[in-house]
Length: 383
Image 1 (cartoon, rainbow, N blue to C red):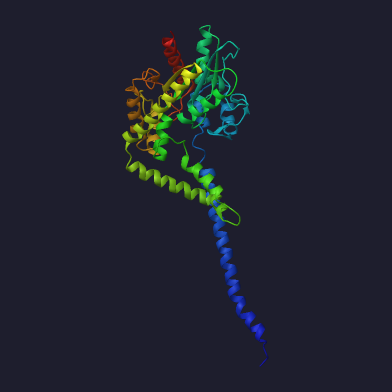
Image 2 (cartoon, rainbow, N blue to C red):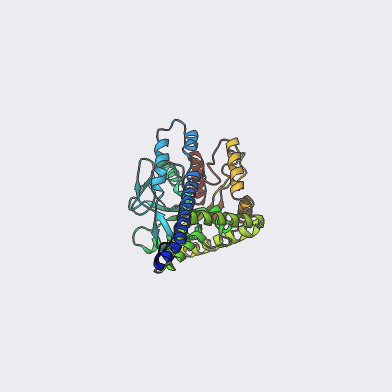
């Protein structure tokens, strides 16, 4: 019988478990890679950005317009943001055929004449003011400037609208701009409202910006990383998919017990508080102001086209209970005694053609009708 070294014998006995551990580790790594790839596909391929109006929708609404494909092409590259103090995000400068964002983060406004002696209007709002789904010359601020131009008035309109902004962010932006030197506004317009309702619906509390929990998680996760940690795992596709699934479940649970009146009261109370702050600023800086509550497919009484009926059904499926909150908030706004708060949610009530791309964004014709209504309101307010 051949002699075997004790060391060799021990090595032989250890090799088998080591091979098994290596095999198990390889299987785990392959499985994790598979999960990551599947999560990537789910996030990036199966679920494209929900705030992009599809090219097909744009082509259907803007038939025979030679700029429609350029608008569809320019949306994603123009949809980039820079971090800004206090307001959190603002649009990154962009130059295109249909979308132009200037160096100060403001979208270009047509028919605006910013001469030294021009009557100056600052217009604040969310993506509906900014002009999602339309080129520069068909935004609400551009149509409003055109109304003044056709009347022979020289006006300078600056479009401070920004994607997903709520009224408090707009108020802060107004304060920051007033603190700077240069021309102050003669009139400040806030065209918004329903985004504040959605903010309360989304977060469960008034007075925060949209996507609060997501941005809070990004900051707190980064701040707590430290050296040698595993927080980087939260930035994987698998973790993102898990967090998205958890957020969806939380929203579904919240929707099951939603109190539409409570959401509406919280949103409108915060909105009216901001109106009082603007009143104080208006006295100090000598400008007039109006708060214009905008229409949505939820809060208007428009006769919906078949396409809009599908849009409404999809919106209710995505955000159950939001329609009731929107309608309740509008009733509270209409009951407000303030002469500076104006409801234009009925602007499409006599229109049967398709206006809404989604629950809030409207076509160029919708923007034109809104601008005409705002102009008429402003003319009636003139001394």
